[in-house]
Length: 324
Image (cartoon, rainbow, N blue to C red; front, side):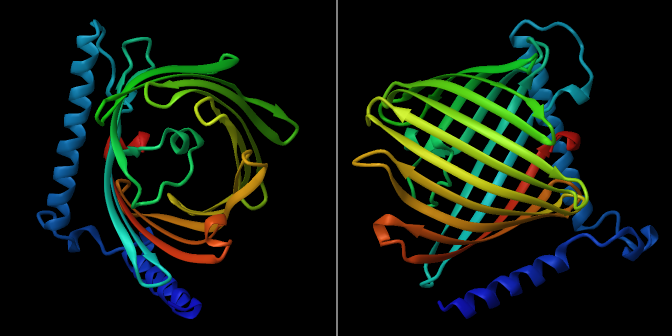
């Protein structure tokens, strides 16, 4: 697929998504012209039923852990996310993936205990701890973890213990700490984590996130630096991502990103770098989201030749809308 065809495909996809984006209030049809018992209403009803089921499950889990206090609905920030992603490669190939994940919050137990589940978790613990973009064809695992989060005051921390599917089952334990503070117009968050995988061994990661809002444009600049070390591999992994968040409208944004990855063995070297743009927008209410992400990827194993990729994504969110 030529660069010209990639560009045409991107523009066509953007035009199609634009036709599905909700119209501004002034351009919408009057309420009396809509069909309240139509397909859209039926879909909304099912979404509300699933969302209420998630909230009810959170309450029951709270009681299992010994909570007797009756809490208001808005404190239950439980959420289920269904995700469909299609990748189109430059040569005409591609891949498709469906994934599910979510959080069941237990606000009555120290107000920050959560049960986290992921159907398409990383198989490789190194990639998981680095937080790199996972390729759709890579092997995956299912994971379930119990996480205790303490909000910053002034230091924030979380501790989690989890299980990951496989033969044998992998056990994961992680503790992490961070702190937010301002230096002029900059917001800084240094962090440190220590983790142990039953199959992958022990490791640690140090990261620094720096943000600066651009008040005149409503944009946000961000730099995220991360260094990860695994005892099993006996080497360091480096990750640097520069981002520019550009809000377009309510829950409609562009995220411009440039990323560089490297490792320390057999010597300090770059292994890949990439540039991509994420366009995300609400398609219906606040729970149906579309994403379009063109990407240019350069990898050492491919002699840093440019690989053009295009990702289409659809997400369905269930839970309390204020926590989406």
